[in-house]
Length: 127
Image (tube, rainbow, N blue to C red; front, top):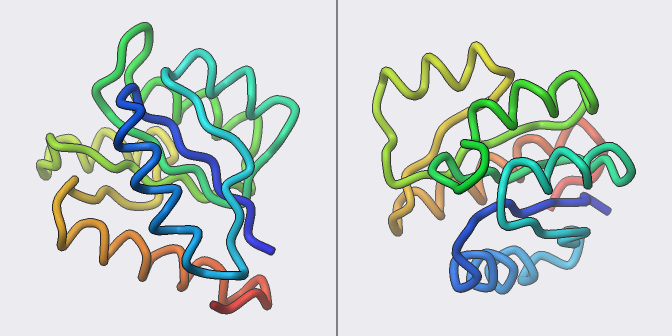
């Protein structure tokens, strides 16, 4: 079972991602958070296999949260899911431990699901 955490300040986005990811019987959303600080606190205790992280959030942005979570849970695959997907942000995110950056649009959701599937494969948990 692939444990996924969703971090986004928009409850509707979290709910939509949860529904989309719930279509795969081998994936479970283990927790959600609305900002980077809460994500860091949650990651200390419940280390997910995959962390979907928004960039623009109150209290702490996704890149700073990724930097800290990478140290707490180094085996966690962090994926940034944002409306601000630019090459510059992707470079900053990768330097902070993010594996890939995806846009919050229909194509981005499809790419996000493909990325989680690829992450699951080496774990022997292929979707």
